[in-house]
Amino acid sequence: MNENLFSSFITPTMMGLPIVILIIMFPTLLFPTPTRLINNRLVSAQQWLAQLILKQMMMMHSPKGRTWALMLISLIMFIGSTNLLGLLPHSFTPTTQLSMNLGMAIPLWAGAVITGFRYKTKASLAHFLPQGTPVPLIPMLVIIETISLFIQPMALAVRLTANITAGHLLMHLIGSAALALISISPTTALITFIILILLTILEFAVALIQAYVFTLLVSLYLHDNT
Image 1: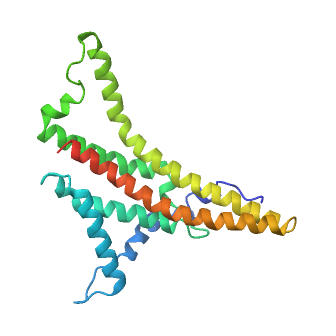
Image 2 (image 1 turned 45 degrees about the horizontal axis):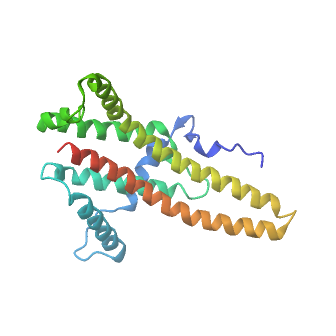
Image 3 (image 1 turned 180 degrees about the vertical axis):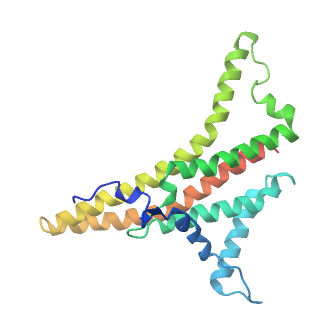
């Protein structure tokens, strides 16, 4: 009970050096490159799921937007696998760090916006001023639309960070409560443990949903600019 509530969010180190790079690279081991003529069931299931998600996301995109297919499927696989690995006991979840999520969100958002200004300049500029706007409101609307544009990557990163962090904190609190109640009230401790199991199942779903939402919003930003 004396353990720091936020200790699991501290970047791990080895011999004084941060090992977050190794942790970020670890999920790539879960998706091996197939070398056989006939894949096993695990690789076949991974490829089927990746093709299903990619087909759904690319359905609304133009040929220019479909060039981002490899980037988007790699993004969702990375975030999803990182979130799932973070649910293991005594593990570190990189997606609980706002700096890392901003590092993913800002370049992708900037790439989509720059693509829009390069290939659809008039349409991109038209987003700053809706058609039929009264003349006195033009300066205010331009400022509001500009602010909303620059808030998009921050919203992406904060949404992912908040959802993953909140789930981990809730699991930690309920687990600590169940452990403390064992000697006081075994019945209450059992009920708390059942709640913890249900919450863990929910967190598995949240880990995958947040990866999908993050990638889908990047895909929508790309669709608006291509």
